[in-house]
Length: 229
Image (cartoon, rainbow, N blue to C red; front, side):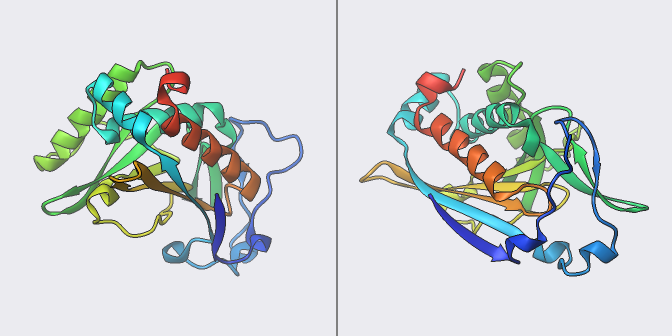
């Protein structure tokens, strides 16, 4: 895995206070404290990339009778459940930005439709079965591509883009209130490998947390039979 710091340097990261536990809201610095951080269009971002072995992933997708989107959402949901310290969003409040926990391991799925990019949020908590998550993903994609707006919207800490599989996506970009973004790249048929990229908002997730989350996602995608349940 390789690190790439998009903007700016890690000195802009916001460490969590001593004694913090997952599930507790943390107030971010005041607007003055964020004066060196660019607007939402330029989130202070850290990026991890790697190429994964995808042979087992493709077999698992077939056995689950799922799309790659469905398997990826399952994997990300399990990873968020294993790392509650990154399951946070950054929201604007009257007193300034605040880091707010997300109650479930929801994933924002970005879908490329005829009229542009649209999104739906799927509950992928590890309490749900893989088949339930698979069906929820399929229903959400169908709704979006038929032009319907999903009836229930949840907040999600992570957004997932899989339309890179068709060569239609650029690099992962974090867009608040999400604090992280994952992109699955195009499959290389000869080597059965896939490029995977995770970016995080450095104000919410630090380098160590991002590395642990990414390592878990990679393990789940590469060895779904052993690890994804």
